[in-house]
Length: 308
Image (cartoon, rainbow, N blue to C red; front, side, top):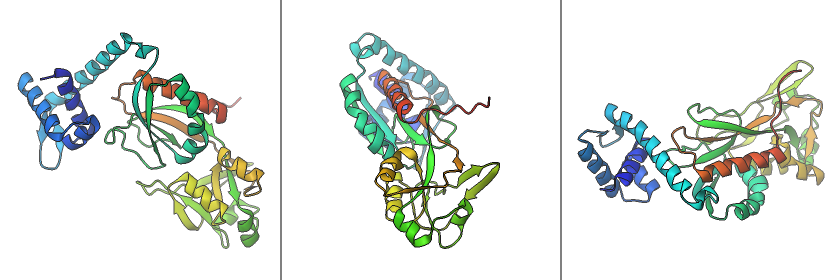
């Protein structure tokens, strides 16, 4: 039995809650993962996992062993890294998930410079605005806008997106130019809705001016779960849309979008990079996080909210 592979298989089964998912993320067969865990239990002479036809639960002994295993695996990874030139030049496969507009307009255009700096890092990039199961899908980290609802993740705030309210000229010609945010909740106006794909939760945006605060729900013709789709809907006049300014800037300059309510203020949208608390922060993940921080400092630096 390869004790390292057995411990790695056991840890991944605990993290994913499934032999099948663990096998997929380790690129092994389910039979191989099962055998590795069984051999580990035989060596330790203790039951680590309770298996049923539907789920896998870790035993009390297994939970205690898991906490020590993940530390040992991390130490082994660090030891190998320190003895190779990976400490100077990180390498390996990194699975990340990022919002589609952020990928299209900021991240991917900057990737040639990242690749030149770290040519041995292979990025597997999921591009979506959906909620991602980092452990179940074996994703190393995600970049997300808005306050994080999963408090179990380790998160680092990397920037703040300034927001604006926009509409296409065709929409304004048809529905009129709203002079107050409350008008967006009444006919003939529509908004472009946005919701998280998995949770189905709709966003409600608040605008502030001189102590007045207006939260807009609004009717919609279409609600989407992807930022690029929302932008497309706004451009063709399906409703008023809330956008990060970096997404709208080019379209405003070409006369395809008009900014509304210039005298109203919207709270910036925080951007976070997050990863599972038990996931070892490898050299390749560290440099990717630092690179995202550099990018956000250029495009959407963190806003200091301290008064005075």
